[in-house]
Image (cartoon, rainbow, N blue to C red; front, side, top):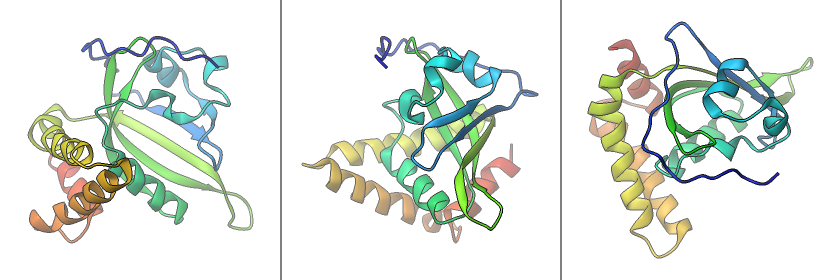
Length: 180
């Protein structure tokens, strides 16, 4: 599928706090289901989305190390919560507080992934997430290779909870959400 214009507009899309954005993917990250809220926010038709890699909505301001942590966690059979900035088809953006889990088939085998997203708390974004993601992105870009940048930012992300008095990334993220 040919991508639509992906230039950034600087315009933020929002959705109602009572709405939940839902997608499901196969094991390779291809979209197998998208609810109406996701379709509206992303700006693609359902036909354009189904079978497409979920990274069709990847925003360039989203650190790669956060996605690495996300994929490592869910491929390990665990759930994860994360703040994510996504890019709509026209270059608008929207923030979500995502809960991503493996979808387990009968017999315990992972058959795909399920993500439910809620409206992200603006205070948490402004005070914690946007500054952290900015540092992670700067670190990713400061290295000679993408691989070295990803490794350095992943180390920084892994060290961040401890520097703030938390044992794990999950504890840090839950503390932010609990305080919203």
